[in-house]
Image 1: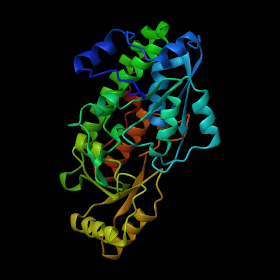
Image 2: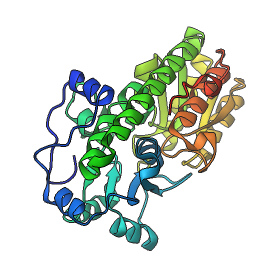
Image 3: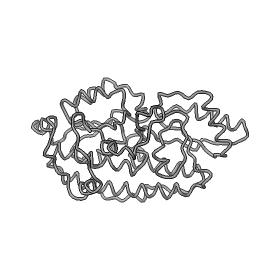
Image 4: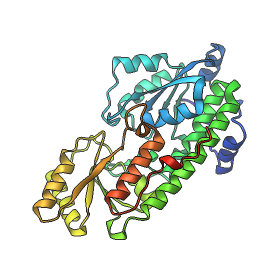
Length: 336
């Protein structure tokens, strides 16, 4: 939700309706939204998002009606991110702000709360957060939820109506365009989800284990039937001890896991220590590739989009663990 406002409980039927017909403007608007509209900022307005995975979805839905930027960029760990002066200026100047929620951006939560007095500041996981049976617990802190919901494409689809609703409230003259874009993008994500299910199912049963630098892939594991082990916890602020590494080496050797994975936003020294430990015990495990966990690829590249990020991860995992993957890129439904 954006601070001080809730769009309420939305059923699956209503979500579908929002995407297939139009984004209807809520009759109960916050003072921030009303003030924004009265300032006549609908044309060429500015949207700032915390992470790239959100910015990419917002960019698809908003299209050419707004400029969209992420303040936490390529290869940057949001768990440890400290806002720069430039980021503060962008947050201050933005007309609309989107963030993940679920404490992913813990270090800038106070800044988001302060900004919400003057503009819409919206958590995209609002609908997901209303379904506690979907959310996974944070293994480091049972009172918190795992924020890495973008790893499950079905789960990440639930941010689409939240973004669409917020944009329609701010710029209602573009509501029809937003609804059309949201609906088309959902169909693309449905195709991506099917690709992930089909490709990961080709990995031999005994090799369906994903070992990575930190516990960012639990939603992926649950959605697509992969066991997941991370060296560090949900947050990269947690440290892995020597005993943790030794236990994981034991696991890799015992299960004869063929590959482990580094992450683009996390130092690779612990993963390389696993490889060395397993090889010292006669098991030739390799680094199967670099995965995108808390950040996407470089802006302007395929992996710098949410679809490209997921495609890269799924294809890399399946290929390294003995499955068959040709890539999703050539099969994206091009409707936007």
